[in-house]
Length: 324
Image (cartoon, rainbow, N blue to C red; front, side, top):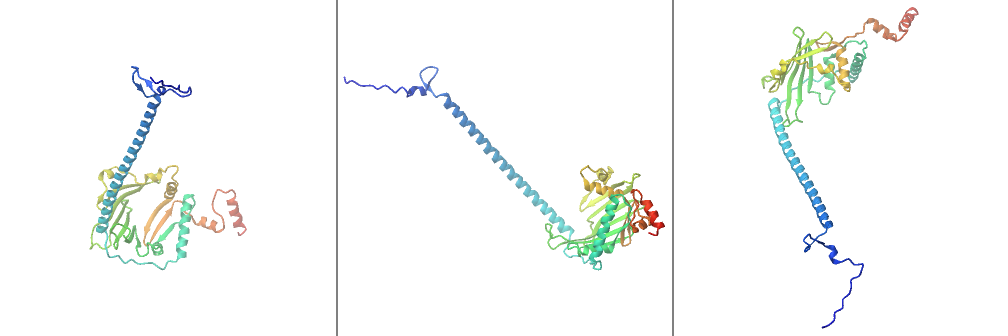
């Protein structure tokens, strides 16, 4: 027999069988724990990726559903507005007067007076009545690009009417159509009923009111207002009788402003500072509670005004004795 030589493996080489672990029965080798741990980690990563894919797909489906629902709602709302515009508007605009005899300087002067009146009431000062004439109101409309020829006001005893000729081009189905009507505010001092309504300019075209609201307006002992609704209708919608029967004061929030609502506080001071608002022929007059009298006007002409400043009375007497 031929002799065969064998070579011993190097000592630094690992035994081939060291890479396998003998099973419990000692016959079949199994993979090491490291290999099993690696598989578990791979499976966990695959699970995370699968979950992320499912979440992303779910969000996309939800977003698509919301987009579809939103589109349907927008489409229905568009059609609803278009139908209402077609029903309540006309193709022939009304011809309203345009007031041109009010100068820009007069309008600016009225703005300054209005600001002084508002600030005076807010700070508790004595101020004169503030008057807005019909000519001035129409002058403001004539000097505004959007209101010129589209708004005209008339004032009578306890009645304020505004003729409206509003283009509806910005509304769905409103191209070449106009909202033409007369909005009227009526005040009955005997019954304390405030009536607001808007009727068509030409009742022969259609005789339906755009809106019609009636309120019961009174003043409480603490000088606050109480405004309750008696009836109301807007287009085809009617105010529920259950709401009317609750006798809610619609201006109650004005007297319960939050600490951060500055505009509400300013308006509350202004309303509390008004004695009344009277609608007269060709003018509306705002009457403050603290009015200036002839003595106040004389003091202001001399550069003095009644105040809590120490010595103002002495200065006033000195000017009278010394002939100013």
